[in-house]
Image (cartoon, rainbow, N blue to C red; front, side, top):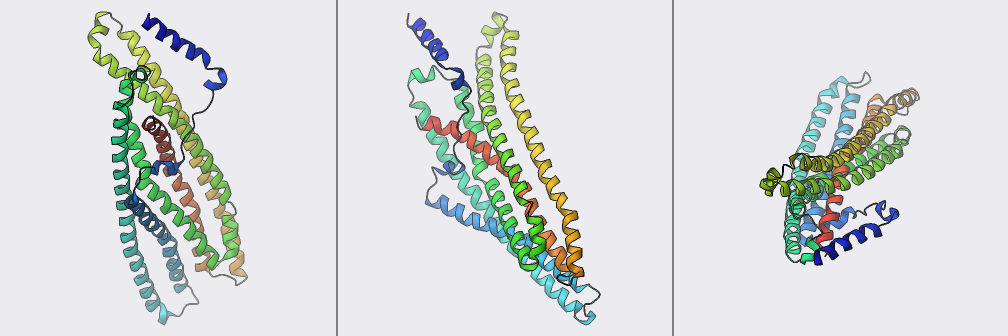
Length: 347
């Protein structure tokens, strides 16, 4: 009787979910909600690592500044007697930038990786503690293998989102800000032209991140269920063979994996479209920038070196937005994994 009552309750719950509830999208936590278990030392690592990442990104536009000065040193109007001195001095500056990149990149990677390791270790402990403290009624509604699979799949996704991927994202942000700052300092007219298409790149990146995050959230659930089913079948393999239900069990597993595959294909399409759209917009800016640069050189407002300096600085800044897109996708996947993990921890 108790088994029949439990089965009846499950059927009534399934019927109680209307179409509106089934179609309601799962809410995903914000990125900074992943830092809920960070302590003071972790925040110190994040802050120092973030500053190092921003500085690391800003070094690339700074290199372009010296590159433009070298171009002007080789121009026809330059004094040959000063050529060796100018190039030697500029070479020393570039060497200093290389040393700065060595230091900032070390702190960027080391501190973000250390902070992510410490935080996810706490998440693993709290998640397991929450699992062993649930009541039996809750376990009757779960796949036990899916719960353990999240330790090996979802928590590493959180660690990746908190780690160097976020540091790389900040590095590209610093590269963008540095490129725009250099552009305005050496040629605001040309910078305005190139930066005018920046919002188009940002819109594409935001839409791509949203679509990838939604697909990743659903894919993680389907993979967890499929892994749980595989674990159940392997543990009961003697019963499966005895009743000759291999084909049925294989179909059940394939159905679950196929749903995850469909979501993965959808995510890949949106990521490909987003990257293609981003670089299409960037390459469109090339002919426009050279056309305006030619006009400014003819008017005597800029030199050939400053045109290349401004152009490459702003283009590097714009391309950094496209390079940041894969990191945004990793962060979105971490948010989706954190939503499921923290939901169980909070029970």
